[in-house]
Length: 186
Image 1 (tube, rainbow, N blue to C red):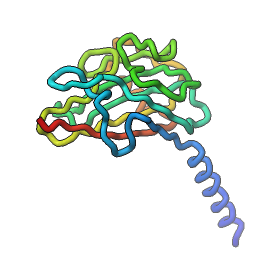
Image 2 (cartoon, rainbow, N blue to C red):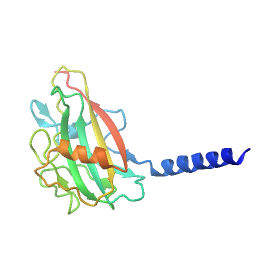
Image 3 (spheres, rainbow, N blue to C red):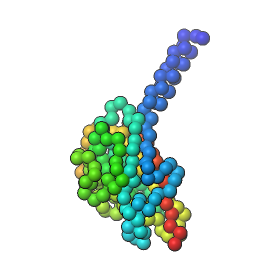
Image 4 (cartoon, helix red, strand yellow):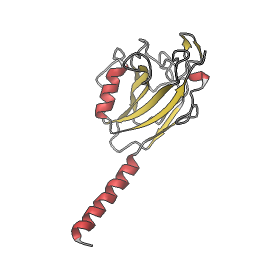
């Protein structure tokens, strides 16, 4: 083996090892990847009858340099032309590794002290549950946790979830995604 090949092989192994260590994971007891949202995560309104509770979320594997987290819930299948933001919370301290079910309630009583909930697409600062149109195919609900290199985003609770998504998608060190679906037969 030549020196150049040995160096390239070593560099590739280091990159693979570092990326494997930096890969975040997101899980939930309330839903599994590719599973279905339960009634607790369904909206109470717009013809839906659910608990309107954000799911319990647990994550690990944040990369070195993580100073805060952003968590979002987004429906790319909503018939709006731009999807629908159901929830966005930012400035979660780097020591946060989970959120309990219902943490997305208005007022954020179950969120860490410095966390901020942005306005979702229903103009609420909190979680709005799933409620796709009756008879439409099931919608996907994408829950994402972003590891951020900053302690605080330069936003407050008047920010839209889409604006938070912009900062998260352009600055994140890493992210983990959990997608579940929900449909109404009616």
